[in-house]
Figure (cartoon, rainbow, N blue to C red):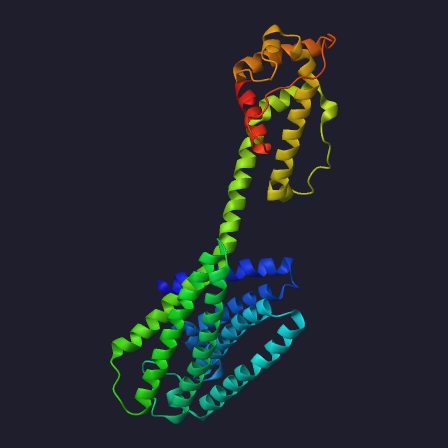
Amino acid sequence: MLSIVLGIVLHAALAWKLRQLARAPSDAMLRAVSLCLLCAALSFPLGVPGGARFVDSLAGAGTAKLLQNVTLLCAVYFLSCFFIHSASDPRAARARARRAVLPLAATALVITVAMVMTPAAERGHTYATADMRVTGVAVFYLTAGLYLTYALAVALLWTVRYARVSNRPLVIGLWMVAAALAAMVVAASVREALTLARLLGGDVPRPLIVGAKLLLDLAIPVFVAGVVFPAAVTRWASARLWWHHRRMYRRLAPLWTALHSAFPEDSLHRAPPVSWLDAVSLRAVHRRYYRRVIECRDGLVRISPHLARLEEWDVHSKGTLPPEVAARHLRAALRAYAAGEPAPSRAVPVALPSGDGLEGDVRQLALIADAL
C-alpha cells in the first residue's frame, strides 16, 4: 500500500512539474527539480519486485538494482543542481553543475564495475539478503551509499538555510523537504554502518535493516509533498478565487440582465472563446467576472439620473438605501428610461461600497442583484 501511495504521489508531482517546465523551459531551477522527480520516478518501478524481475529477465540479474541506484544518484545530483542554480549566477551555476557531475559519474562507474565483478548468483539479492563479504557487493553498496549520504547532507544544509529566510507557504514546503532529507541522511548513514559491520563479518539485527528501509520509504513521499506544497497552496488559492468569481458572476446576473437590456451598447464586446476549454478556464472566468462588474457599474451610472428624481432617493443622497428599496426604485427608473422619459438630473451615487477595493463594490452590486 505504501508503495502504491508513493508511486501516485511521485508521478503526480512529476506531471505537475513537467507541465510547469513546458511553460517556462528556460527556468534552470524548475528544470533541476523536474529532472530530480523524473529520475526518482524512473527508479520507482525498478525497486518494485515485479519491475525488478522483468528488467532482470531482459538484461540479466542485477540490472534492475544497478539502474535503480544510478537513477537515484542522478535524482540527488539534480537536487543539488537546484541549490547550485539558486545560489549562483547562470554562468557560475553551469560551471559548478558540470564540476558536480564528476563525483556522480565516478560513483556510477564504480558501482557498475562492482556489479560486473559480482558473481551472477549474488547480483539479484536485496540489501537485506546480500552477502556483504563478497567484494563486489560491498563495494557496490558502500560507494553508492557514500555518495548518497554526502549529497543528501549537502542538500539538507542548503534547505535549512533557505527555510530560515523564507516566508509562507514556501517555508512550510522547505521544512518538509528538510525533515525528509534529514530522515534520508539518517537512513543512508545507518545503512553504511550496517554494510561495514556485515563486511567485517558482524551480525546485524534484521529490525535495524528493516527500520532503515522504512525510514527511507517514509521520507520519500514527505520529500515529494514538500516539493509540491508551495505550488499546491498557490493552486488551491487560485481555485478558491476562481470559484468565488464564478459564483459572483452568476449572482450578478439579475442586475446585469436588467441593465444590459436598457443599455446594450455598453457591453464590452469580445470575440467568443475558440473552444469550450477556454470558456471554462481560469482566465476566462476571471475575465467574464470583471466585465460583468464593470458593465453593472456603468449601467448604474447611466440609469442614476432617473433615480435622482425619486423623492426617497433624494433624501438618501449618498446612495445608501437598503438593497430592497434600491431595487424597487431601480425597476421604476428602468421603466422610465424605457418609456423615453427625460432624465431630470445628472448622475448620482448608487450602491456605494462601505470600504475601498473592488470586492466592497461587488458586494453592494450583489445585494441589489439579490433584491432584484
